[in-house]
Length: 273
Ligand SMILES: [Zn+2]
Image (cartoon, rainbow, N blue to C red):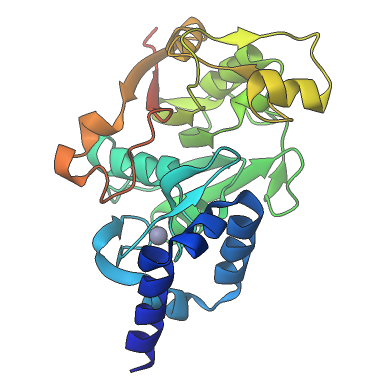
């Protein structure tokens, strides 16, 4: 009864009341709405937004909506139950389909710049020996500068490093370090926002405002293009690239909320020899 009442209010608000829908589209209001939703207990969020139109592979809920999200709002992006975004969902689906991460053999996993939604999922996998690392995030298990990793060669079966390298001035050095600590039969799942045709960087740009203007965010130091793959290969990796079209059936791209064209998953193996 309560659920039906709330759903009908939300339907009216979001679908029929164009004025309110317009207000919710405004950045500040949307941000407040998202913060308010996150304060609700997860079972209530699940109840409020349950439906048939969307499916989140991370929290495994059928939902009515993914919310708009981002500095430049991207529609159909944010899961109101687990807070996953397009990149988290595409990475998870790709790993399920294209890697042995979910096989039962024990694996050591290094999660760099741990996103909570992914951290929670990985920690629940019984065969994973999980380690999170970050230079600044206090929640991470170890402090790590990925341009100088404090672990020996061939330490990890898997590395998860998403949306980190665009913050790192010495990204090539970081890539070589990731390659060094990966086991010969392991793989790294690396992601960055792909927002231009060709990678663009300018180390002389240091002011946050100028970085935001040129690189899209005040703490980014470059924009990557599809030649991100070349940088990874130059660092020694064999690279396979997966976009949504390659891992999700066309009819499910919107339903799974993986339509973002700036997102691709780079699965990197260590070259032989
Ligand atoms: Zn979710």
